[in-house]
Image (cartoon, rainbow, N blue to C red; front, side, top):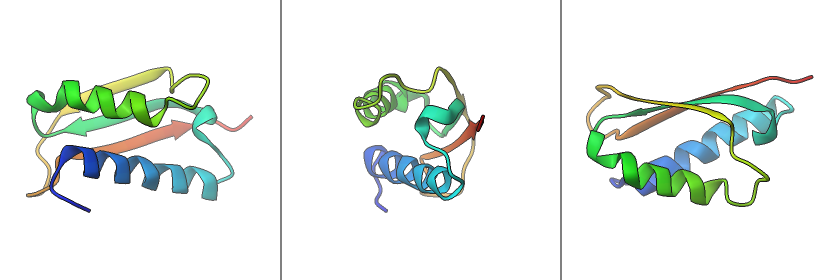
Length: 86
């Protein structure tokens, strides 16, 4: 989708949202988000992007974990979410 953290993060969040919707869920059903970054220097920018993405929700998913990992070349971020449907 692009070489920047912003491009990759926004596309990844949109992809997760599509999977949630396909399963009959939304971000309001998400109880935990895990974010995998390849560079600790991206943490502040990731927080800005994350907060912007969820600005229209009453509140962003409450639990979030961010870890630093090795991903395939060119990938800066990977995101997964756990949703619970009542």
